[in-house]
Image 1 (cartoon, rainbow, N blue to C red):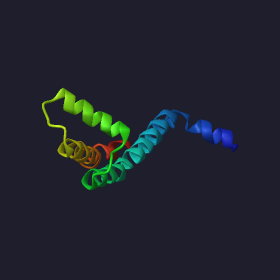
Image 2 (cartoon, rainbow, N blue to C red):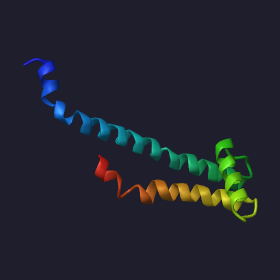
Image 3 (tube, rainbow, N blue to C red):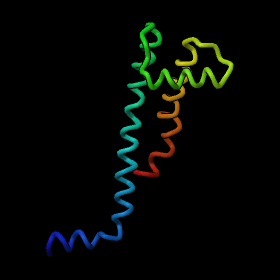
Image 4 (cartoon, rainbow, N blue to C red):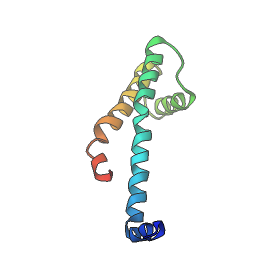
Length: 97
């Protein structure tokens, strides 16, 4: 039995395997958002500037709403990001792995 025969024997499972590998990789990348958010929270609390991308999101939310331009908006966004990554993702992840 050649390696090629072994690979083609499982050909019907290729699509499922590729989707599973891709989603598992995506969840691993999403897991990196928590340390990023914690670092940005430390920046906000210590008065250091936050990343440009995050600052743009904070500015956009402040313009779109009537919220004041101060640190609670940035903290709310970062805590919401941590909530999404940890709590909302948890029941969904086992379906894709």
